[in-house]
Image (tube, rainbow, N blue to C red; front, side):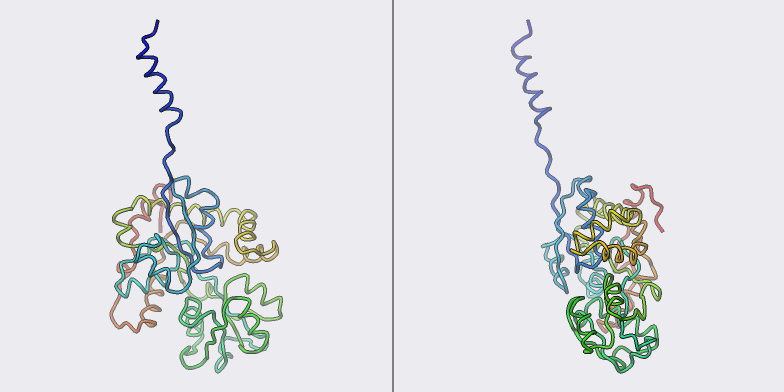
Length: 322
């Protein structure tokens, strides 16, 4: 006969083994600045379970303008995905770093009335943007400078709001051209407009990545590594899985399949293969930020980036970073 004490211990062991409470996932908050496709990696990573695979439960929150920077510094969110805002904040002395890049090229396009054949013909004209000083405004200036125009003197910028409003202003003749991400190019062409310039053909510009605080890097490096890794898994998925990504875009952006397919075909190859932060692109971000901030001092790449954890994530995924 078995000892009652041993039987009791056996029952307790069984209860502990089979009914042990599941460890809750780490809860984090990630800000993204808009519904445009370059900012989908971590949203897709949450949808596909890439974050949960590593015990991370993420809440993706739409935050425009400078709100994500304040929220990061105050600890209200854990990560941001807008690169230019993060770099500008770091140059201003805020304790933030760019730790990964998910879209090393810009998907922004300059769309205009069909009578304009070149960007230089926009001299003296009005260009529609979302809001003055935002990321689209910065890239519009970069495109103009590439073609020899002075964006401070040769054109006028008019804040006309979201994509639909910008295209409406273009149609009504309030603006000669406008700036935007896909599917604005698809919609604009359908309305009879033309694409005058594509930013990814002109310069390297990390448009989407992962920004976090120096405190988070020091105290929660394991969490940072998991988030970086999930983002890389998401961009790998996007590049390889057209149909799955189209379905995600339809749900996330509330667009039909034709528009989602056009969007995917415009941007799919812009997503990073490994999360690497391109040096040339970061130097471009730094120079644009310096001009916007009127900062005369030299700024090093190390001042705005920390790539140590990225290397760990790449190694774990079997990737040789660039």
